[in-house]
Image (cartoon, rainbow, N blue to C red; front, side, top):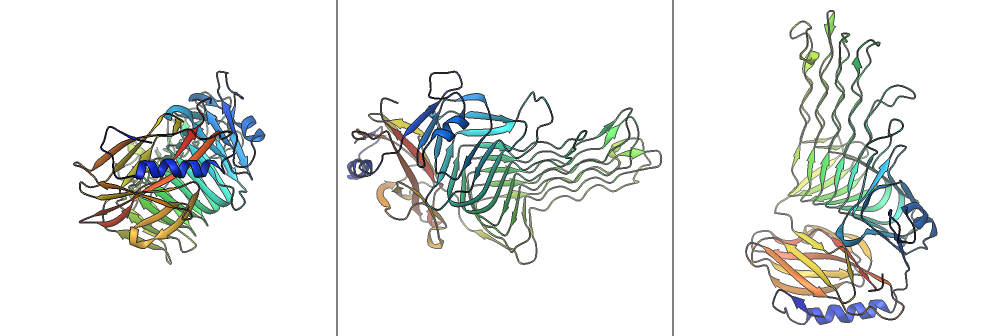
Length: 455
């Protein structure tokens, strides 16, 4: 193995090559391919999931219009080829469901996005992603998950749905993901009876779980606004939080949290409705949750306008209260770790004889070390200001040297033959960096699929 576009840094490239060959002796997982346009083993993801064995990899061609799918009780890796994205569109969500994973059956998603269908036959409902009752590690990288908006009519559900909901899980990590809650229903009375507005949903709704966030963007859905030709005195809908954590242990690095904006209240000759409250950037709710933030700002959303700014008596209803940056209920623990986040990105997919691009970002002069394992794990390490997400055993360490100015090191690492009968090897990596100001800091994690050249 050699480096590309940089000087050789000790003997670590050769040591990675040797480690890959050792890993290949135990790597026998199969690879199934999905291409919506044909040419793969399947044209949809769910049939591939059904056919896969525990530990298999599903390689998806980037495309839009994939149907929702469920992973139930088996460990799989689903990755979009060539660093692209595959878009799942749902009407009756969730768009993607991961559930009932036993210990030792991890799931990894990379490059998948899920959102309500643009042209549905009915009203979409559900979360973009649901992860429930998982005793194994779950990793989600380079994803985007939007919850459905609330709606009225037949079987109404006026509140929006969370971008992602995590419940009863041992360890779920999001890296470079965007999670956005659905907006509350906004009634508009034309010739119909006035209706109440719906509440927006959180970007992330996590309960009774351990959740790790790196380089993510979490946004709560806006509250519904009351409007129409026929006047209404209903209040505006309250907005969703960037993240709502209940009974959850969480860590956030390089992640932003923003509450949605409250909806405007209605206005009529006989009065008007108050504005909806803005969502909190972070809400540490019931069950004594705890959160440590490193370089992760939070902002509350704006309150809605009372009376909707329409023709009702001026000042007849108050504006909604703005959301707080962080709201911690009694028993909750919210801590802020000093320092700046560090970042690591690996190529999503690399075929043998190709080159993995590895990019580490921190402060100029940081001493950088690459930590590599062949399985995911999770271990809080206070002295490294983070959670170690590659499995701790075995954990290979490679010195990369100091980061050059302006604090970015990019390497191209050639991949050797994987060995006879080996279709795929997964690398789980993280960087540990030591700087003069921040001391030791763990970077965001990243996973890379190494593939046989024939795939």
